[in-house]
Image 1 (cartoon, rainbow, N blue to C red):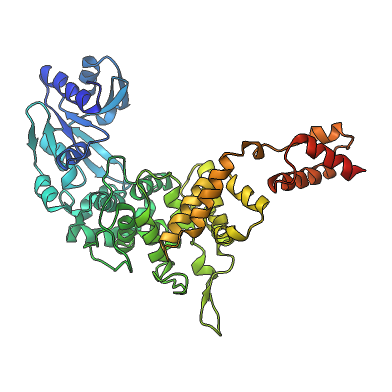
Image 2 (cartoon, rainbow, N blue to C red):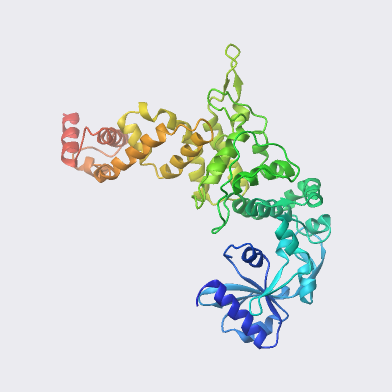
Length: 463
């Protein structure tokens, strides 16, 4: 009874019992008809905002002048919007004129036909004024009306078309796709925050979206709307490239398309192919930073590429360090939160260390295992392997070492602090830091196992 679907149905019932028309609209209808459980239920009605307020105990006027209210029921929020028509878009985002209208006009103002369906959950009747049912069956993303007009109203729809095609495994209708290619530079007029949010959704499909069981290995061919069968995130990357949007939202990634790699290490070919294959292998429900670590871990290869004149092999010396700086610039440009930026940058900076884990000293290896970002780095390494030769020897070794470390909790906290050293007779200063670093190194190497042994070592050192 408290499921979002049940509550959304009750909201429609309350509005209809009060004499108003009311329907589920948009993405929830699309997902419902596709057999997916909708994550959000939006409701459209001819009731005005003040009438919606009067019918429900708790409402939030998030966009009263646009006819948009939030109804809070069962601790959950549902958008209830008055049927409206829009006109006079001036900034590629917002309409200057809003007119309350009927359901058919409201459907006609929406972006894509598959998002323009209305559904009455009481009578179980679909209302389709835009041809959305036909396009759902044909698996097509098509604008409602002229593509140039729809994209001109809100330039973010250029990215949304790519996201829906990737999420749903649909094709983009040729005229719509051609308009995206022609208007792609317009995406630069949209705020970094809105572009970021759309890209986050593109590379991390929503909960409930079924993972594709079809895989495509090898080169990702150029397409004109027709797409190879790929899991959502990989398909999204290819569509960004083919639509021309990639060079405007993530221009640094465009350089990876023609960046070849030595087949000794990367039989998959270009850096772009490598990234695409990693996205293909990315598990559902992955850490929110993982797609971005994947996208950016080799971002500096094009600018560090060198070909050995003797062997012909291609090298990318220091690309992880240059890449960390580039990744930080990109994430800051897209207004990512500082903490998330830091963890992604750390994963990029350290990703080349993983090839040497079996040769590391015990203390060095344990420091790697105890890094706060280690879980993200480990999963990035796994995908890095699967996106090339597929050898998981180092990954399995690290999993085993991490499991062993779980059973040695005494290693995690340092044996001594600066105050302990002062109590032993040292004066505050640089020497304390040097000694603490030495003690920590010996602790991680299992040469000092408890505070008493560490204190004895210090006393001996001082003597």
